[in-house]
Image (tube, rainbow, N blue to C red; front, top):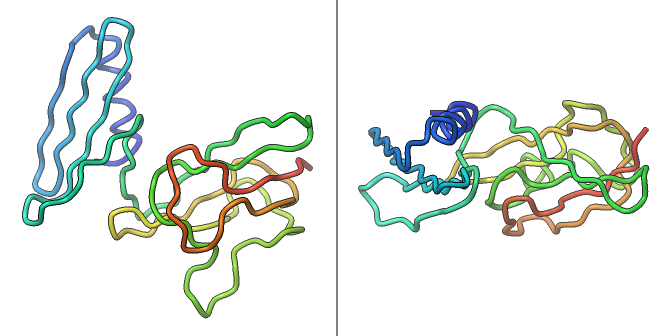
Length: 158
């Protein structure tokens, strides 16, 4: 099940009025609970072979091999935006220790350009930019744990 399917399922649960949906497949289990105001909680548990911590977020941090779009939030200056993490995990600026960083301060980026990698549950997710502009500041150190919706980069819009 990919992130889009989970988001569609959350929307369906919110519209249908069902209070709880639980789906269990071979390598994961997902439970969606909604109260009267359509607030959802998504829980994902790793394979039952090894005791793993339960990760909770809305939407769930689903490991994906395909690139995940980064969230973008406006900041005080009209021309500056933050690129935020779409999931929890470990932030990497390059594809390997001996590889160059995807972006540096001053790098020009376009929509769809890879800006970093987030490792979540032993899968490496390429994070793509949803804005075009110039990297003004890198807000996270390499190989650092990050949270869902945490600002990663500050971008001056083109």
